[in-house]
Image (cartoon, rainbow, N blue to C red; front, side, top):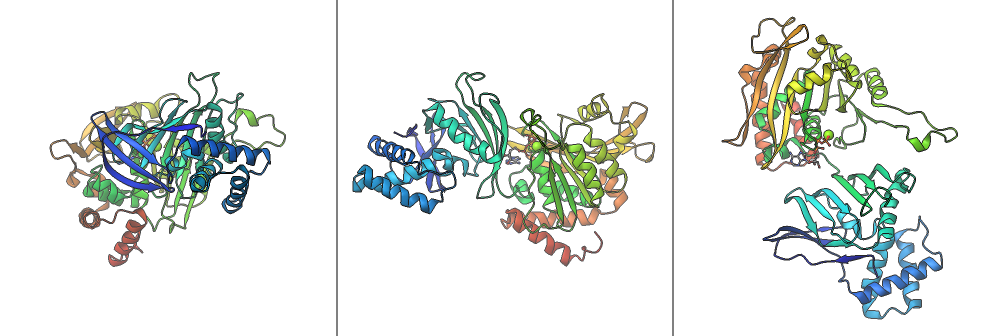
Amino acid sequence: MLDFTINTCSGSVLTEYKSEGARIQIYQSEDGYCYNVSYAFPYSDKVGEYVYKVVEYLTAHQIIRPNVTREELGKLVEMAMADVGVPKQLRAAVRYYVQLEAADYSYLTPLLYDIMLENININGVDVPIYVDHREYGYNIETNIVPKNRENLIKIVGRVYAESGRPLNEQYPIQDTYIKLRNGALLRFATAMSTRVARNSPYVSIRVQPPLPISPTELIKRRTISPLAMAYLWYLFEHHKSIMVIGGTGAGKTTVLNALLVLLPHKRLAIAEETPEIRVPPTYQNVIMLYTSPMYDYMKNLPGSESAIYLIDLVKYLLRARPDIVVIGESRGREIHELIQGVLTGHGGGTTFHAEDITEVFMRLIGETIGVSAEHISAFHVVTTVKKLEIGRRVTAITEVVWLRVHPYVIPTKMKIKDEEYGLINVGWYDPKTDGVEVDLKKSYWLHKLGGYDEVIERAKFLTVLTERGILEAGKVEEAVRNYYREHALVRKT
Ligand SMILES: Nc1ncnc2c1ncn2[C@@H]1O[C@H](COP(=O)(O)OP(=O)(O)OP(=O)(O)O)[C@@H](O)[C@H]1O
Ligand SMILES: [Mg+2]
């Protein structure tokens, strides 16, 4: 028997596609959506019994080695099937399920390779796996039910073995990430032991597709408008700092990442806790660093490595002569390094967890982070994203102007300790049109840079790209390079 059961979804099929040899169907019924995996061969108890026997055989003969290739495994399975006496008509199915068990991540493989998924949630055994789907929304039940705790832990354990982080009774709660063959990045958060979990293992997997969501894709999804994107693009390119704020999973990193797809001529330097940000493969003048923390279990190992924190990375980035410094997510004192970078003329981008701009500044000047009131001037534009019922939307674009240095603007004022800041609402979300409106005339930074017409031009360009269906990040980047060429902008930037 295989250690999972396959239920059947009910309702009607809305869509269907392939993932790693399996067929994925989305069903709709009055209970909502259901995510149905059909493996390449139909599964029956008879097939399961033979799979079990073959796996037993292979294990007893100690044939399954960790580094066995698919071809080798194929031959071994044929041999085992002959010895076990699998009937001819079942061989194709048995072969398939044995390979599924032995290769990659067993029956989880099609789910893990499905980049239409945003999250995969395994809730222990005897309950279905749930998924969040990029097209069909959240908390969708699947037809896959894990049955065997040990087996499931073993499958998830493969991921941890690959990444070198322990997942065992001593360290039952552990995060890790892996990169799959298709280029997708998976972030795992696991609670594997009955020591801590009622129905272990709990596994939450965030799926990051190989290429970032492109600027045009964001426009198509109405997360942002062409004009708002063009405006941010222009300012970012001219070394105004961009901070994207919002709640958990609001889409902050995605917006920041999309902007980077528009800057192929810049030397980018990116520091992150986990490697989330992606750039098109044609980006070569780029450095991307991630932290190497010291885990509890490493401390007493002889010759153990030192911990490398975000702040170390950002300090290094500033020495690497970048045009634009990016911190994936700022949470602590590393933001001081970013501020130094911006104040010395670099471009800067980061995300920050906060619901609105007041919270951002209060947290920044608070005791934990300790940014001085003058240094708030390093933040030029703050973009807010929210996860609304209808999808993710940019809900505000706010310029921040230090009034002591730029005394001529008189917008909304905000007092931060002894300093006065002007806040200009350049962009906002209009629920009536479901659009992100931007008033360029209000912009102080654009007024200083003088790029009004250029922003309009770029907004048109982004609109046309979106309408033509140029949505893939690599294709957008190519079009952007052409845009710069045609507009003879390369030298100037
Ligand atoms: N505008 C969008 N449209 C569709 N999917 C999106 C959009 N923005 C983000 N996503 C998806 O939502 C998930 C979370 O997005 P993202 O990581 O950008 O959020 P975040 O705010 O940075 O989250 P965190 O709080 O974890 O840092 C990702 O899988 C991403 O692909
Ligand atoms: Mg993020």
